[in-house]
Image: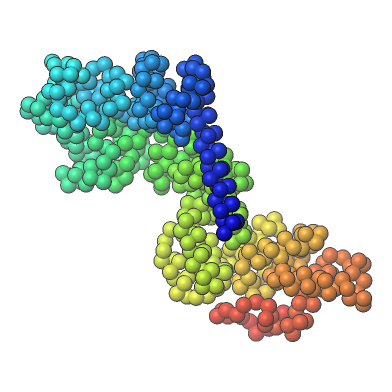
Length: 495
């Protein structure tokens, strides 16, 4: 109980220290940008609950506000601007500009959603929209296709409508004609992807042009409606700076994983750097490009968990290891379930697949065996030898599919700790199929056997002697060494 409380206190202290660190970082940002004393910046951060604000987003929000001409006093006097995502600020500003708002000041922008819901007449009374402005016509000016403009129905007495109603009516009509969609398809689109409702016409048109250039037709655009509220500069920067990331055609990857279109170039760089920290090769990355639409923090955390889990760590060099990152929670849940069933040889395909039926079939079959490809891949990476040589050597052993990769790793690590060279272990590769405790006991028996001059033996002979001692104890049948499993085993001894 005391130990648990100690761990809890440690975690709490760590969290508090991290929050204090973030608060100090953000106060430093305000101090540097606005030229205020650190003490005053810290008070401002605490007062307006900016302690946990992402530093990069905080800087970008400030920069966008300065780009609009807002003064330091304007920005600091409207702290809610600093709590909003810079892309949200930009989207709202463009939409309001398209809808006839004049002089969109910091107070108006910070409460954009509220003003968008107001009746246009009321906005004109407050001088937020000029009295002579026809909001309906003002929106139409921002639609590039003049033929579509002619087809959009006129809204009579538009000043009596809420601003966002006029915007959405025009937007729905525009998308219906631009995407050649039915009324039902547009209704479904707006029901599922509610963020489209207040989006700028310029942004949406740019997004449509971008995804069409990537290779999406109208059906796919309707299916992946979130692409319409994407930030187009992200996509353009990614395609320009990383056209062949990790050797993969980025446009092709975006067609396969549409969410990549919405990924920021900063996140892509961070994730690629994290993957390289864990020595993930480009060939492996190319097989799982959807890794890049995750958050960098999640990718790093999951790779660290994999690296610290004996059951997962042995799969770090597997060509499909990133599927364990993408489907990590599912893989952990499956592993836990298999451990309860005392099944220890599940392959990465079973653990990391997004298809539940593959896992269900494995459970129903009930055979606790590895996939031969997983064993070959593991040994290939362990010994740095081509797969064909591995396959020829390992296939000679009747039980090689029944040994968990984690157990092979334990036996290999033990032999390395006993100063056996990798090249020599490879020559007697079957030795790592045996439990580490039996290897240790056999080695101990050999060393104390006075009839054997242990020091005069080369490493290959020592390893073969280990095999002999273990098998001799079990009458060269394998019985009692490995778990019994319902698989076909040749009727032969292991001599």
